[in-house]
Length: 119
Image (cartoon, rainbow, N blue to C red; front, side, top):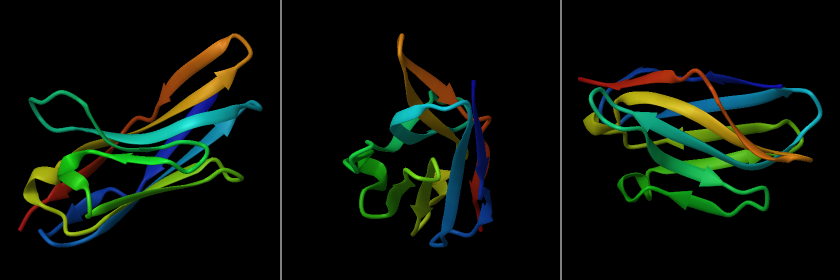
C-alpha cells in the first residue's frame, strides 16, 4: 500500500506565496507520474501541475508562470511552489501519484490540504 502525506497549505494574501509538499511512503514501489490537483467549492477537481519520473512538467494554463512543480525521486516527494497567488487559487489541493506495480499502474491520492487566498 502507498500512503501520501501533504503539507504546506494555509492562509495567504493575494500576491503571496506558499509551498506544498507531498511525501509517498509504504511498500517498495516505483512512481511514474506525480501531480497536484485542486478542487474549489462547487467545482470539479482539476489538474494543477504534473511531473513525470523523467522531469517533464505540465501545467494548467491558469497557473503557468506562477506555479512550479518539482520532485525528488530518491525521497519520493513532490512539491508545488505557488507564487503570485490569486483569490481564485483558493481550493483544497490534492497530491496524486501513479505507482507502477507488476500488475499495472494504480493512482493514489492524498487527503488534501486547504489553500485559502484572502485579503
